[in-house]
Image (cartoon, rainbow, N blue to C red; front, side, top):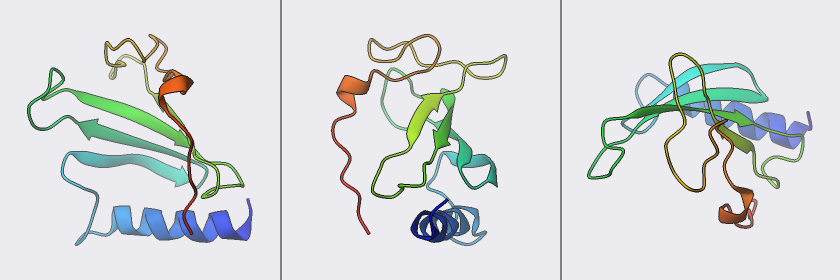
Amino acid sequence: MSSIATKRLNKEIKELLDPEKGPPVGIKVLNADDLKIWTLSIEVLGESVYQGEVFALRFTFTDRYPMESPEVVFMVNEEYQAPIHPHVYSNGHICASILGKHVGVM
């Protein structure tokens, strides 16, 4: 992994795991032992058809991060399911056409 990606990912995971700052409300880090692959759970808060549901997402980062966006997939297993949505396939993959173009920020 490039030094830029490693530095950025280390900074971001440190912030997410910080006991005082931590992730935003409703988000938990399930696994980030591998710097390239993180799994987060997200509880849907507020008014939504998904309110109260918890989804797990896998983020896979490449050497080109942050200039290239990570691949994001809903986890589908005995504990988690993908949301029922026209742009999310039953295997958890998100329809790429709705994601738009990523603009890396340094």
